[in-house]
Image 1 (cartoon, rainbow, N blue to C red):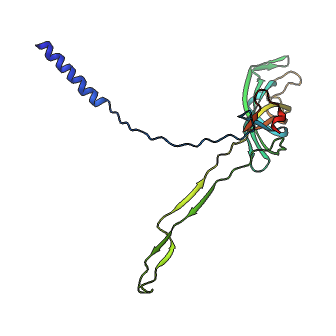
Image 2 (cartoon, rainbow, N blue to C red; image 1 turned 180 degrees about the horizontal axis):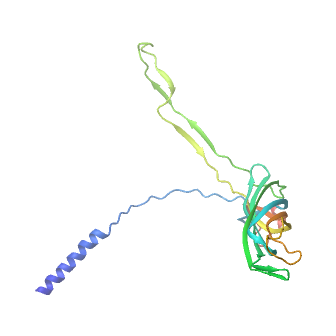
Image 3 (cartoon, one colour; image 1 turned 90 degrees about the horizontal axis):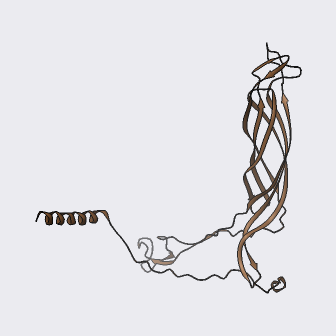
Length: 261
């Protein structure tokens, strides 16, 4: 009997726990009607792929002053990477806005001890970003798709209503639009935004060490001096593609381009 009582309580406890733990709320959804839209194309199939609008090489000049965190004896290497953070075609114009930076990893030597016979130090590095931005007009080989603008139109219903008798005859009535409601028809279009892809980047650079001088009360070998300022001149050439996703007709098997003229 004791075992049966324990089993009954165990089953009742599970039922109460499940009732408190699980809560399911469901509903039946109605079907939404749809109307098939035939893609624009002639024969074959229609694909949606990036189309090259233009490919161009942009040249711009950058001047920068760099201050190192400590005196340097020599520059061993400057590793450069070109980074573009913005490449935007301002439609409906043909002006392209470009923004980015050149990341530089500068390896330089420092002075730890020195005399007229030589100098010893350590190899340090410093990573900096040199920003740039410019605009340039674009000559398109394939023009961008025409922009579809949004539109909205308001409409109202006719209404007949009574007017106060103290200023009008009893048979008079107000014939006008209904001001107690607001009705509107709106169309919103979603255009494909042109985007950029980088092809090549070239950097022509001239760096000059500014205010090289000997440290007070220290001896250095002939011609060795310390500096912490670098004056930099760069000419950057950037080749890129401007693309836009478009629907393109692709001939079917056994068809030639003449079938699509």
